[in-house]
Amino acid sequence: SSALTQDPAVSVALGQTVSITCQGDLLRTYYASWYQQKPGQAPVIVFYGQTYRPSGIPVRFSGSTSGNTASLTITGAQAEDEADYYCNSRDTSGNRWVFGGGTKLTVL
Amino acid sequence: QVQLVESGGGVVQPGRSLRLSCAASGFTFIKYDMHWVRQAPGKGLEWVAVISQDGRKTYYADSVKGRFAISRDDSKDTVYLQVNSLRAEDTAVYHCAKEGADISAPYHWGLGTLVTVSS
Image 1 (cartoon, rainbow over the protein chains, first blue to last red):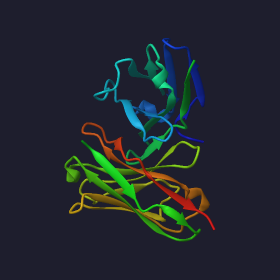
Image 2: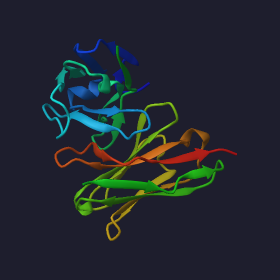
Image 3: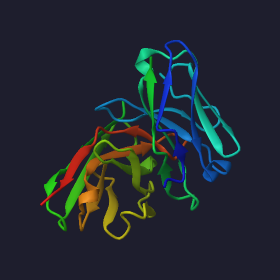
């Protein structure tokens, strides 16, 4: 089992808001990073740290953390947001990294 | 812009070795830690290894420790992953990734190179 737990699949109606969550005790110490991966493509980082959205990522992507749970929220989901999403953080050693199992987002 | 191009994958028998390469461009290579992350077919991402910007520190996932070795050649702006004693479960696309300017996590990624372990 992974140290970071994600729901395997989530769906959202076009234009609605969805949150993808990542749970693990690591998140009490380290912030999560979030990656979007579309079929056949490399992952793209979409949010990290407490407040950081990389250049070029739409403002509808935001992140937050509460206790042992990190969330990636898409406000007004678009068809192009349909993808797999992964969270990531340092592990207990602080020197290695771990990914969540991933969440497949379907936009209906 | 940042470019990371992996090579060296292929079909290999169990127990054999490969050396994967990742050629970097578009940034000052010596300033950044570099990661390898793999993805088995139809599965999720698995972090594999990281090497510090000065090459002195390396860390590995438990699943590959003792079998894989990450290294870098700053004269060639290239990071390597020597993969030894390959097993069927090592079959995956291997991505290299550069840390971010303000975060140590994988930030920019290459498309990856496929390693298939099969007899």
